[in-house]
Length: 148
Image (tube, rainbow, N blue to C red; front, side):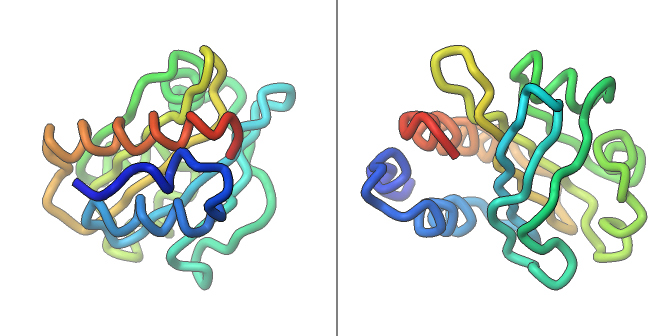
């Protein structure tokens, strides 16, 4: 696996840390989101496809199964196929139109607090157990910054 020190080093720009995450697990779209617990919203900070998913705005996640699982329970979400994509995303049609069928969402958690998520999507194959473990390691390294 890649050197994880830049992920946890606050002197390394976040965009560089996100680029390392993007390069570590094969994907068709990588995003990083900051969590705003007071409003139960996520805000996109980084995207490898800014035409389809620009860095901007917030998405509500209050009272959603995905928000409850990933943001509140701090569990990763891994799925494959249209049903799993629809379960995770309000804009599932857009994601499916991009040909993305595999999803891996990983909470970034520091001192018991969800800071945000890193998210991988691709056409296939489904994300493997090893890729999930790698993603969890990347999220934990990012969490050492204490902020996203």
